[in-house]
Image (cartoon, rainbow over all chains, first blue to last red):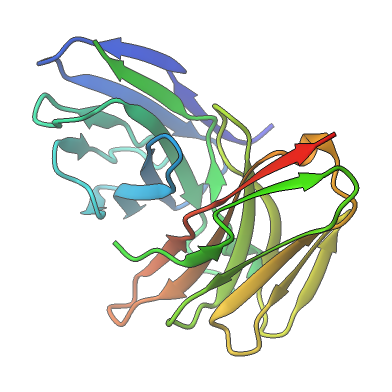
Length: 119
Length: 114
């Protein structure tokens, strides 16, 4: 079955350490996204990539980095510069709606999330 | 960053009651999406709307794409305990630069009392 796989599901980090969250999709989607969710809050966009080897900052990119070397993969690194990294992180993907006239293209598909806790 | 105005923020309802929530914006969207998120999981798509005025159902769920393209609502009929969760709306639009983006609502937290 096609879908988005995030790993690990739970991650603990000591202060000052960098950690990388994995996101892999086999949906052949063009675009991939990283969102952060804090308890009781909505989704805030960290980074997004609409094409391989290109990515753009979202609303809260400071302290995070990404790469998009393959269409299927969009890993997120939470660096030591991120002051408050404890959160639930969600990866998503979509077809580029500009590529197709199919109305079904304009849908975001999410992974199951990764919960990062800083000790 | 921009967020859609979603209301209500939270709801406590009795099992069997109908639920209504909505999202509004000052921007026009091409697509409206409604998601449900269970605790500790990723959001799951419930309904997608693509045309102004479109009314779409998915079981006990019904959603509409506002005529002005600036709003959408979601109704849940005859609620059951497993409807508990957070419901998010999202709008998709193209920017002037030719890129596209998704804007999310702040979420409606639904609790169903048996």
